[in-house]
Length: 326
Image (cartoon, rainbow, N blue to C red):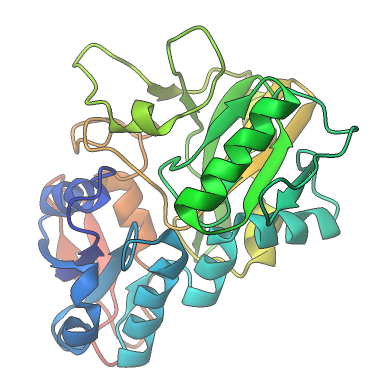
């Protein structure tokens, strides 16, 4: 099977390279292309590829525009693995996604939206605070402020640098979990819980510098989360309603703060997930990262009853797919 992978060339997340390794391990061919060439390549990918994975990080230099790539692929008729462009655009907008979650009763950190420099921060919002550009990824522009003057200065800097609103929230310390959910033939299912470990003994945040650092072989910054079985099931099911609320289909991921056993809150939502090939090697077991042969196998939809074929994998298992045009 030929699978196209659209990605931002040079992106530090290296999601595309990790996905290509996983597909190769399953015995498939991966065809990579730069997201910046989507206007000229979309119809080629729609015609030549059985499936297309969109792992765009930024488009035209901005996170805000990356859902546009998926929209172009959809309009060209490409068979895309994952959620549609509308769901991705909503999940990529931190302000809109948080508002949607809160309106349906899901717990989110208290905070405000800053749209102009020197905007006053209300007295009820006490430090420590965390600031995020509304549309960026890979923790670009992420800041922690321990005082109100520091928060005001950081907000002004983000507005100047990224030219977009700033989401300012109460910083909630605790464990940071990644909960990946896939929508399959039998409904939603959670992949093994992943816990991010910064290893610095300070705030458990994944800063931009942390993500850009090449991890040494002995560093374990993404590990299977250690919880009692009952709690693991509870946490795995907890994000399902938001994903259905956003009309997600496959490979969405939500990072949830876990300050204490009975207090969860959504801190961010991602479509598609970010990844790192050091954590996502095809030899790694499930639960060590986002993109593995096992998770890629789950991402491909099951065939219709009247159109299907079985493709062998290198691990002795098989994948069912629909023929092109079905």
